[in-house]
Amino acid sequence: MSDDVEAAFDLAACLERVRARDQIAARELVEHLHPLVIRIVRAHLPRRVAEEDLAQEVFMKVFTRLGQFQGAVPFSHWVSRIAVTTCIDHLRAQKRRPEFRWADLSEKEADVLDAVLTSENDVGVNDALAARELVAKLLAQLKPADRLVIQMLDLEQKTLIEISQLTGMSTSLIKVRAFRARGKLQKLFEQLQKKERT
Amino acid sequence: MKTSASAWQRLAAAARHTSEKNDDAAPFGFSTRVAALAMAAEQPALRAMVNRLLWRALGAALVLMIFSIAANYSSISLTADGDQDPFDPVAEVLTTS
Image (cartoon, rainbow over all chains, first blue to last red; front, side):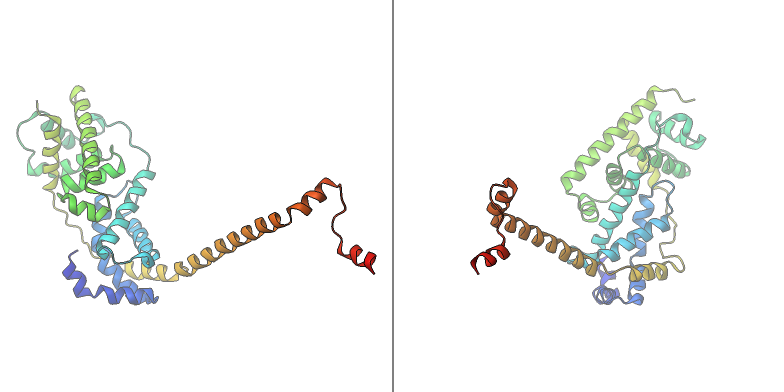
């Protein structure tokens, strides 16, 4: 969400009204922030959690903590951090997935995995959806914070600075988490290469 | 055989080809429900203030308790030993009158 959009919306006036317990202003704030929050929630949605429920939880935290917002960072960054930490908490709460196996993949996903492991050619655009599903299954094997970082870096192609602003992590911590996540993914690929596709 | 790192990069590149066509706008009634829930919730500032006052009161009570024990330690220890009678102001007045 750009600063221009925030300026056009007159965020400061809206926040002032929300602090004065104005319900209409609260509704306007939710509508204004929903695109930002829902994109984060969709990108880091844990299994068995509805995106609307998670978005609602994020908004409730935003309203509860509104008194703590001092304006040191842009409001959209502050909200992003709440959304990110809420998603991480949910990802931590869910049980770890069982071992990643060929047998758990659909035919399309197995083809895509076969292609990236053995073929020199790029995966076709037609297989993009299967690739995305496969990526989601691989990322589910990572620690929540590592998963979040690698998703923002490699899938959403955000810069270190952007991720730092959105998550509140330092750039060095982001690098460490990305390194650890790639290492874990590398091990997963190596394990899969050793096993025969069934 | 491809290196694992490049396998991940190629897979991620393939996954990026999918375009998210989800509607980002809030679903009908969502903002009204969330706003109503948020406004119905107890004012956090008030709750925090009450909490803070309660903790301060508890701290002050503890300090007073420790101070009064320290100030009256000698009489308390004598009473506990049972060697001397505890100070009895009524008996004191009766004996002097």
